[in-house]
Length: 270
Image (cartoon, rainbow, N blue to C red):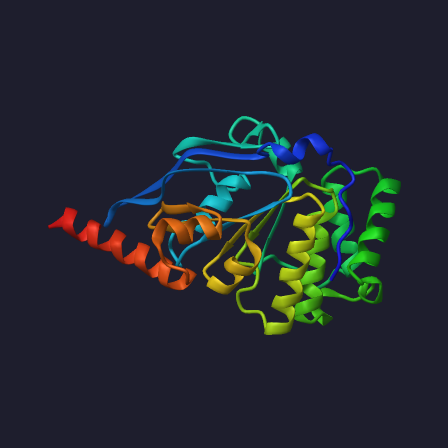
């Protein structure tokens, strides 16, 4: 897969953070289990032309964090700024600044690939001619012309992924959010998707990428935050994480951090 180039990114944006997360917290009150903390005061930032990875096991708080960034959830405390807009007070502007995709992103069975992407472009308020021109370029770059009239019910998994990418890109957002996008995909489709994400980074997009797969984080991410029980245990480039831990293998580094965090948690509880 190849992707359309960004139309709106200016060179001055590349050196400054476009995503800023400050002391983000989200908890739920459960009648039986009491307070459940999903995200516990995390902070990070990401810049244009960067893939920032959230690496952690299932239940670490990755999806909750990305849903808050996407304005699908409101935080209990903390602040999110995306492209200069506040997630709580300016959610419409934030949504226009992001494209969101996960393996669970729905593709409607009774709509064609063209109709689906067009529908989302119209939701973003794009002028019809501008939208048509942009879609033609997207469908060319993503090699989707052969499926433009194909119904969602007839698409393969790889075809649906292309539609989901086009839908996330149609309004040319500066920030792209991918939540476990390769979960459940076969090796070929997953590899093509990861290549596309790397191309988006190279074209100046800021990409927030969550995964629990070590190989994906190693291969793709410029910086990584290791998340566990809603907290960031370590953050930096792969080289920085290796230097901090003295461990070259990311999987061993990851397990060391998780094991140490669980030991401290058990000591506090005893």
